[in-house]
Amino acid sequence: MAQAVQVRGRGDIAAARRVVVKVGSSSISGDNAGQIEPLVDALARAFGRGVEVILVSSGAIATGMPHLRLDSRPTDLATQQAAAAVGQNVLIYRYQDSLRRYDIVAGQVLLTAGDLENPTHRSNAERAMERLLSLRILPIVNENDTVATHEIRFGDNDRLAALVSQLVRADVLVLLSDVDALYTKPPSEPGAQRIDNVAAGEQLEGVSFGESASGVGTGGAATKVSAARLAADAGTAVLVTATALVEQALEGAPIGTWFEPQPR
Image (cartoon, rainbow, N blue to C red; front, side, top):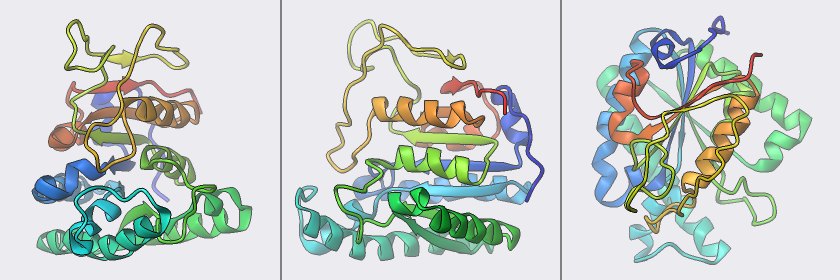
C-alpha cells in the first residue's frame, strides 16, 4: 500500500498517493458520453504521476436504457436490474477502450451494501482492491445493481464512494457532478452563493439543496454533502466539483467545495 499523505488543502491533492474519484450518471451517459475521454485523460495523468486511482462510476442503468429502448429511467427493480446488466458491460467497455490509449488496464469491482457490512466480504473486497492497486490496475467500482434490492442498496454512488474511500484509506475523495461546487441554494436561484470551504464538523446551517434534475441519476447536492461528511469524518479530505474540471481538481487547483478532514 502507498504511504498515506496528510492532505490539508486543495494544493496537497497533486501529492496525494491514493485518490478516489466518483462520477455520476448524468456526466458520462446519454449526450454526455463523450466526457468519458477527458475524464480518462485526467485519471491517466494522475496515474502516470504514480497516484493510485480508484474510480467509482455510476451510469450502468442510464447506459443500458437505450439498448432496452427505454426513454426514461425505469422505476421497477427488475427493469433497473436488466438495464444495469446491459449497461455495465457497455460502460466498462467504453472506459477500457479509452484507457487503452495510455496502456492502462481497468478492473471491474461490483459491490452491494451487504458486502461492506459483512466483515468477511468487506475483508475480501479490501484485499482484492489492494491487490489491483499493487498490480497498477485501475479499479472501476459500481454498485452491483443487477443483484441489489431496495432494502440493501447504498442509495447512491456518492455514499458508495465515501465507503470505498474508507475501505482503501484514501487521502482524497473527489465527488464530480454537473455543477462546479456546492451552493447555499440551487445555483439557478437568485442569491445562491458558492460554498468554498467546509470546516471539519461544520453543520452548514441555513443551506438548502435541490434534488438531481438529470432524470438518470439518483444523487443530488444533499447526497454529496452527506457522503462528504462521512468520508471527512473518517479522515479523508473531500473536494466536490464538476466533471469538466476533474483535471484541475487532481492538480490541486483552487476550485470546488473543500471539506476539511478530521485528523486520523
